[in-house]
Length: 407
Ligand SMILES: Cc1cc2nc3c(=O)[nH]c(=O)nc-3n(C[C@H](O)[C@H](O)[C@H](O)COP(=O)(O)O)c2cc1C
Image 1: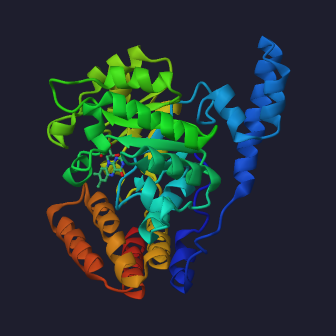
Image 2 (image 1 turned 30 degrees about the horizontal axis):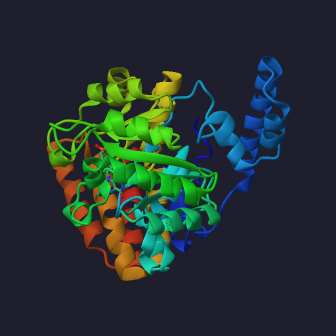
């Protein structure tokens, strides 16, 4: 499950780290090719055993993504792998963060939601959200909207930009979104919701379309199974369900067991989402829902390595080792560097703060009272940094202290 890790050792990082990070555009097509090759070998084996139409095999061997969809579902996973995705989160899962998740081994990363008409108009924010981090992970673009033409056009733009999968957001609870009758508000109008899925499938022209939703608008209308079934009928290939209703927002606890009703209603894969924060909660969510995979949101903020670590643990049964402190610091510095490249220094540094704060809270866990306060002080300093050099030097001096203490 785990792919390439950061190669730089702590000492090298410390002595050389200040000199800069890798270019944001640095990708690795080689790993993608390897995955395609592996899938094609598997296709060859399966076709030999079960006499799948030779044409299908030829398509797969041409390496066309559409053939993956036909043969393997929207994601090129082996049938024995339980995937754990990083959830799309506005203001969080931007391209710099997704690049880090990818480097730590994420199987797929999903963009923040992007409005079809903003994409069509070429608005800067939409283009930033939509940006592909050039890694190995399956590139999923998430669209939001309520208008057929803009969603159809958005899907077409995403397809032409190389999206592997196009996801539709029917789960966002924000009043700004539901007030415009999109996001989870669409769960109140299934006719319209289904016609929008059709529009996206049309614009996607063969690229896989998936759907992310909640259990329903409120506890009295938990219509996720019906929407999932109708979405499947018009071509959706995977459904993610956050185990809350829109009226729950983020309150209470996610209801994983009720997601089993969606699992039972469709034959396409269902992904369970909500309150998953480690391998134990992922296993419990999978067991209660019967879902095919899991998705991790808030728990992964600042911890780009978490979804792939959970995926590794639930698939191998062996607890995944957390990346070293040095690796995590290196990753955050690279993310900060990329963030500044994408948004400029002022916004870039602000954008990285929530990740830093969460990472530092994570590092502080398990420390005694006095040491815990040291971490809180570090969090304050790091989150008050206004420039990239300031941020780097705070993080690297913390790393140096930690290494000296450990030596
Ligand atoms: C800050 C934030 C932004 C979010 N943005 C999106 C989004 O753009 N698209 C989407 O489908 N869900 C979005 N979500 C919902 C998450 O994808 C996920 O469904 C939710 O957080 C529940 O999972 P969790 O308990 O693991 O965080 C967002 C959630 C948060 C906290």
